[in-house]
Image (cartoon, rainbow, N blue to C red; front, side, top):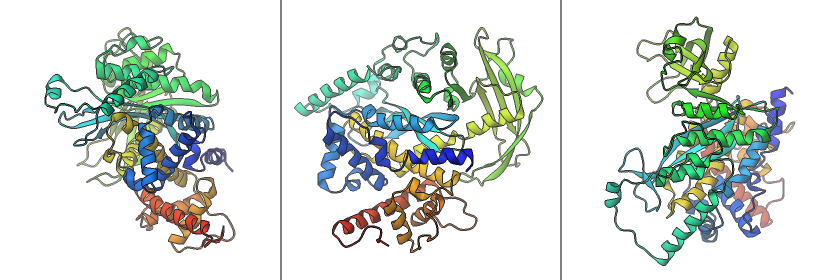
Length: 517
């Protein structure tokens, strides 16, 4: 096996089933630990269903609601075992990309306390800022960090809301929320809670960072990008010297405060962001014009995926790179890469990327590597798509933002698992399916498709995954390529129903182990 295949095999060996992600959870009560694992497995088995339908009967539904309402349960506690698993997987790879982005969660019309306005003030909801770790081959390693917050209503918006109904239970929930907030503020190495307080209560945030950057935003949501960098930088030493982490962000991450923070910490991880600002350089020239005036290093060619109203097409970009010094006094060394499309169709706007990084790009190969890493940023968009449209988290009907956050913690693990399966099927199609699927999942998949299991070898990951996707609506025609996340999550839902049926029949003695087909 090649080194990449060997690493993928080792990664798969740490990721057998979704229940393994919470195997080491400790909520202070063994019954509570078992309950959260059961709730997670039920959500994974039926990701597109609402919470009541995803649980197996009224007893398990009540248990799920009690779990999310338990004062000893926080979303950080729920996710911490998954963070550890993600770190263990990351240790197996020489380069890990930490993708960060923010998405809106719209709960308009639902009676959930603690929500705030979204980009449209008339809409109510919250924001999720997540960090997804992947390999350069786009195999998803796990969610490494998250920051959930709601904006505060303006005085005018608050005045239009109906008066809140105060009850003994609502007062108790408020007191519990204050306790959770106080505990969360003890989270070491990050400024997540302080930053959230800054957004919601207009309190200063810079004092909560050990050595804040001089221009760290005060009372600005942009602090989430710096806090996200800090969280991953704190984790980096745990991965060992054999793993280098690259922080990747879109244009919102183009912040001098983030670059200064990385410099102050001596770059424990690298950073790569899409440039938003055409800054004035220390020498007096403009950033983008300075790079455009250099000779091209060469070209890169890749397929640009089709979108609504646009067909997939082959893109050729001309690449230029220039070492620059950013900041008022030119104290931040960086490299700016500009990739400009050449020969674009007449009716299409040329695709141009302007990137900033602390890494060098003195050759075409080095620049292409960085561009490919930035292209992989799209994986976090897919993650949000799975979370919102596959797991339908915007349909959660819980009455407080704290309960929603607890539910989101589990759904993020479910969304990661779906992405992991999709990418493993593409990157390592010939690995044995038993590395990522349970035996019953493999057997029932073949059963549902009326296919026979291979008799001379174990089924391969890609074979099983394509059958699952076909169950979910993937046509598998010659020109269809590999299945996407949507058909995979639909297919997995039906497979898990079949698995449950098989396991019940076996328990009743109507099936023998291994003889289900």
